[in-house]
Image (tube, rainbow over all chains, first blue to last red):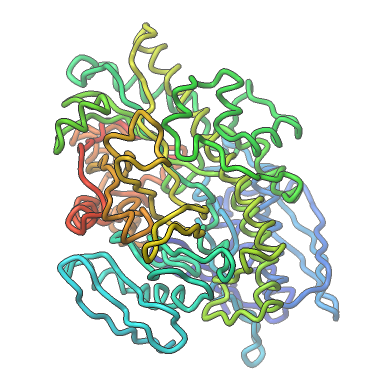
Length: 138
Length: 480
């Protein structure tokens, strides 16, 4: 099973993420987002940040999660390589994010994300596998 | 709405999507026959038809020839809504609220400064930050300052010494949309905006030094101070993270309000609220904050472009006057004569430019005799245009025209296409220098990824929506 793949789009770009659990799905979607902004091979794990998101619908959870990661990059310069995401029964999220602060000497920015959109937004379980689709405004 | 949208030819430049199903009006697409196939690759016609389903739409749901797929509304979409029965939709404005363009002229002739172009573009590249990880150390805003920017727009920048009063006369809405209320903005939006004022951003945003390579209307060009071979500067940017966050915040609000007010949405990204509802009024007041931030943003960058030129040229009086500053992504209340009566409507322009004709009171006095200048940037390897607005646009499109070239290749396709080309080298051979914060951007933004803007401009001129004045050819470009 792939962790994630990018979806081509004329104006923008999307991520299709997969996971054996909802937590793993969000973990992979987060990795896909980091790798859109900065090549994940250049990101080290020198700091840890915790994120919590209150209960909401699954789709909202995905948009809020990716929006939070984008906000942390844009305002604090935080970029993460790895995530451990725990989803509670009521769809609230607790995540441990491992990464570092953006360093122009080592990190080349591939693209900046304006926003996480609701276009074709989808979170669903297909058999044993969770799958999501998210598009970003670039 | 069925997946297949019916399209009827009206004339060489106009195509109608006849009202059907839940549509409240017709859709009209401005294009020539050759463009239609590319336009509809991602069901863009359907997006025009979807907008026609929104309540209170006045006139047609329209799309300009640079139309391409957008979130909810198509990019290149124009739609006006009744103040009592109509709606306001953040998707009809876009994430980059008041993304727009400004053009500066100069007294410089390209033949006289050809050995200075490299120094000029390097200086601009060093002076104007792209955004992430780089900001002007001399521009520190506290929250009070930032709120003043949101209320005053470009006028704040002028008050602080970043420009001259004349710049305001040459900016759409005098660089300030009224009734902006910073108290309606989330802390997150304020935080995203705080470090990004005076930054270019990424993607298709750019600063370009070019020259006037062709003149179509000598009289109007002369009135604008645009002569053959004269050096010009285009700045294309928007409201940065602040505008993106405001759009994001209000899409969440509007998803709920569409349900609350029983608005049947053909696409979730068209979420909206009645113009006269509290949610609608709040969005307009928040949108005005982002629009004003964008006006101030472009004003600051124009000031630093002027300083860069003065530094490299070693003189002050370079005639770097602002020709105009236009919004591309905006919703505004404007008056039009509709069915013989003056009526105020809320015009959404998403990837479209206001194009008011000569004599219109919405244009500053200095251009009232020629019509509002309209700035249409192309890709970084070809050309851009200056047009003016017409009476036809006022009658037909709520005084609107196209806004640019429009992508035809995805970023991945562009990179694949560019794999065998050294874009920078090819542009250098054509006499165009490129500077970019990210090499990736150069590949993604290669000229072939865009429509030929000449085709787009020829349609709006052919349809009578605007009139060509001059063509600008790039010499050096900074990409974000």
